[in-house]
Each structure stands twice: as C-alpha cells, then as structure tokens.
Length: 409
Image (tube, rainbow, N blue to C red; front, side, top):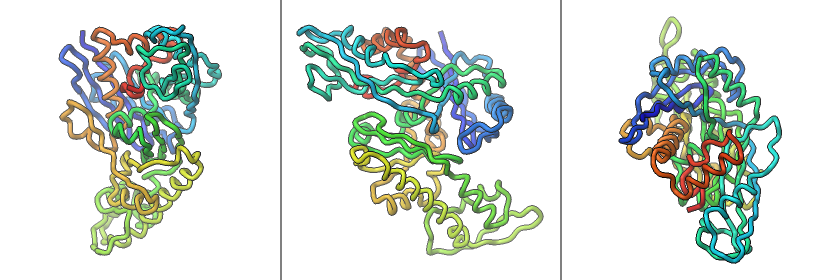
C-alpha cells in the first residue's frame, strides 16, 4: 500500500516542504514547495498565528489531505546531547542480537526531565571485555558487553509550540528530527564524519554549528546571526527596502572585497539609481567577517579533542553568497567547501541547493526508513524496533539513520 509523507523545514526566512509517496517501486517525490516564513525571529517563534499561516501556504499547492505522516526538522539552543553507557553480561559465549538489544536498552535507561522531549537515541560504539571502539560486536566472544549511546532531547515547550502551529494549520506533525543529523545524511562524507568536520548551516536568522567526529556529533550550538543581518545592512546602507536588498545581495553580493568595480541599477520606490559593486562589497564584507569571527570564537570554546578537525562544510541559503567559502578559509585557516545535498535516485535539480539541505536530508531519511519498513526487517532494524517499543513511543526515527550512525558499521 502506498504511503504519503511530508518533510518540512521551518526556518526564519522560508518554509520548505517535500512530499513523497512510498510504493512498491520505491520513493517518488510528489511535491516541492518553498514559501516565505512569517512569525519566526532568529529561529524562535514570536507569532504562532503567522507561523501557522505560513505552514498553510506551504501546503496549499500540495495534496496535504492525502498525507499519512509529517516529519519536521528541529534545531536551536534548546537541543541537548548527552552520552550514556549500558552493560550486559555475555557469559563467555558469542554476542547475539539479544545482547546488543539489552546493552542499548540499559544505556538508554536514563531520566529524561519532564520539560524535555526525547528525539533520538543513537548507538555510538561498543566494548567487549573492556576493549573499546567496536562498531559491531555481533558474533564476538566475551563476558561483558558495553554500549555507548547519544541521547538527544529538545525543550518540551519548543516542540509543543511547533505542534500547536501545525494544529492551527489543520495538520499534525508526527516526528521531529534534529536538523544537523538530517543535513549530514546528504551533505557530509563518511570519512569527514570519521576524521572530524564542522558543519555550518547558515540560514537567514541563525547559524547552526555541529562538529562531527568519530561518526557522531561531538559539539553543537546555534548562533543568532545569519543572512538576514547582511540583507538588513544593505537595506540601511543603500536606502532600499528589504526585498530589493535581498535581490541585490543574491544577484550582485560578495563576501569578499573585489577589485573590479561595476555599477548596477537598483530599484527605489519611485525611481531608480545606480550604485557601485564596491559600495555593496563594503557593506557586506564587515558583516560576513563578523559572522565568521563569531564562529571562530565559538570554536575556541570547544574541548581541544573535539576542536581537532580537518575542515568545514558550509550549507544553508547564505552559504551561496559569492566568496563565502573563501572568506571562511582565510579566517578559519582550514579547508572549506560548500555542501550541496546529494540525494540518491533523485533527478529534481532544485533539491541540490544548499538552501534545501535540511528538507533534502529529511527526505533521504524518510525514503530509506519507510522503504525498509516495507520489507523484511534486518537484524539491526529488528533490534531498533524492539528498543523503540521498550524505551518510548516518542523515539520513532532511530532507524532513519545510516548504518554508521546506528551501529557504527
């Protein structure tokens, strides 16, 4: 039976929605919409009715009455990540499925405060008889099996407020996924996540900083700066409205000071005039330099072991500003690349934009999860399903993650 799923990313400046249908032939994208976001400031809801209206607009051209399941990305400084350990006895025999299940269950048996919402429990690694760093202990012989997991939670008020916005739009969100995990699914490479990489999702109102190392998130924070600050600076400096400032930034802006000076026509309310690209650069560059410097300052607060990374990946709409990657390289002193989503078996070129990294990641994870669920469960899938039933009805998406995040394989 076909299943219709919607993946949605609610940002400060825009809301993006992908709808997909899962059939026996596999996942097929049935819709893609992006609309301006209202009621969000620096990643925080300030007007629930406006957010609800924006959600309605995002779904207005989609057959939302047919949707069976809605998945939404979530991020911000309300997110908390902690590690936990669990041990089970093996008795000198070979490790079997039940042993892995027990170790993860014991590691997951931690107190979740009443003001927190459980999002994910991610197995990180195992140890057998004190030998750490084991990715898959199945079949190993030993006496003691230990599992290490990451437990990711969000503020209950943030989650409830988002749920209420959907409810007012006549919809129900079924699942929340931590956005950096979704992005990593389609933007980061496996060797980057193993060796150490900083993922920077530069949106309109915020910048998410997530450090991946040893194939897990070792650090995360959100800074209240983004592309909107650049747009506002242009609006003030050039004396134009925000819409025209955004157009100038997107079409003519650069994060670097360019040698070549040209003159472009800008649209005023009742007239037109010309402005030099040098003038535009001199407005944009200081703000971009400030954003990069704030990120570098934040990186200095990270524990030294987690700070030893090999580079950074920029994604999000503001990563597309010309020269942003080169400015990061010059200030951060490390290799930097732009992260374009790579979604397998998808021909929709719009999904390749960094501005859609979150929703593209949600799509990839949803497609993988629901396609697998229509087939006979694998060993790992069976374990995860059992743990979900034991731990919490809230933990629905642990098997969304690729194998290296689930069992380190």
